[in-house]
Image 1: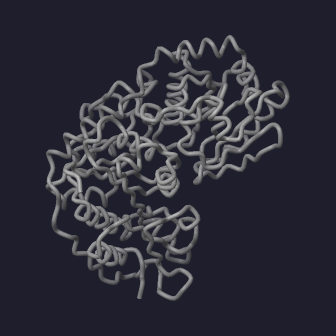
Image 2: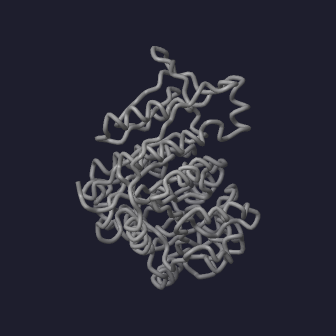
Image 3: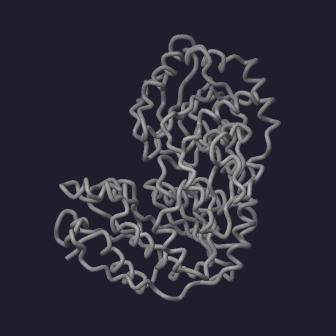
Length: 457
């Protein structure tokens, strides 16, 4: 056991891997001054664990990062019968105390001295845990550039945290939403990006690793997850433009483990990159890119100087992707669609335009805020003290009982595991993930806590 403080880096579920990628950047940044437990509501977590175990995520195993998954209220495991509509209306029905006690038990089990949350809005269960863990220090890392119509009341939740940090953004000057003039946050200049902590593979090696040819230009298409809205039509327009006017180019399309788009491969013209993580290690393989306007994707592509056309998603409740892409365009570091997608793709693939974009990207501020956040997290943890009291989770049977039936001996019996995988989290059978190497006391506490959500007898 090390003498370093333990920090729980928590992420919301999200629609992509942005929250996870930022927290992993913090965990891997700078000197190894705190030990990390990643506690995530994202179903992409098994992919991160696999990447750490296989060495695809360099440094994670060496730093002893541990992981635990918790289902969000949107996990799909709640009932699908008449109770479903009630649980959708009362979103935190018994999930808030479940999350509260999950956090409390994890804090005691790991001896954590701080918890840092990356997400748009801290959950009621997280805030309740904060009140019951007075010796721990709590931080909130949240990106800026919220849409003007986003609910500003969520930002007021910073009063519950000892530290609130907003990492830099290439388009911060174009922030016209509720995050623009907040005075309760510490703003950093640089963005948070895995590009600052992971070395890119050499171009030829990256292409070979991805199964891409080394003798033709390759365009990277990152259409997003498609969770919020279909991205297939936009992807089809990009592919049509390449097929008609640039047949010598190969298109490589990313599809994450939690993606829902249906863009398929096309022998000789389109290759689908299934579940490549972390993608930043392979960006040297690409001559140009077309992507959406999400925080992580934009800063990964720009900090590695890949000439990029940005097509923002319009369906995010808080993230102002149009503002981010417009800011990048006005700074001259990326293209956006002006007349049509086809015309914009044509312009992107002009060598002179690519040279201009690379020159502009070379002047951007470094995406090194992960180091600054790691410094602040270390100080936060050293100011905290571990909790010692286990949660007394003895939920009574509620009326009405809307818990998920997970009775032993049935197909939906609650499954306990130390090794979750993607397929496991996609099934109807609910899963409870236990931290590797956890104690019998923790397992017992977790069985009690599960009763908030599941009827097991």
